[in-house]
Image (cartoon, rainbow, N blue to C red):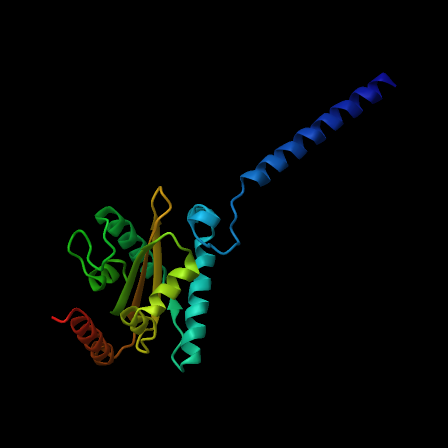
Length: 201
């Protein structure tokens, strides 16, 4: 009888230990499925699934484009990498703009990432806001909205870098991968004209 009680005690002790380990492990798991709202409400963006953030971003953009009769975009891992690298770089520069600290252009960064195509635009932002609010900011600006709604674009890359105080540096790069360079080039020239007009060069 004493042996049975001792075995029961050991079994119960193991059960309690395993249960505690499971509870502690669950407590350490990051929130991977939620929508990132911003630093104040959601904390660090690295606690969220980057693939899901990009998928929601792409779905939202494609829905907007579909409403306007535009083609759907595809996400590109190499462009994601290019965008993330530039996001970290503009954080280091403390300036949200399209030029790398090494003088690189969006086109050069896309090529270095291994993507073969013509960059049709790049949107950048520094904000404490989340994944959907940064899109709203880009949509409100005529220059970045033209990039978002460019019918020549076929692929998209999205990257970000969050500094310690919670500010996020977002980069969105758009590329045309059609075989017709002339078609992409024509649209790129229109984009350059819009930049020149915007800054009144």
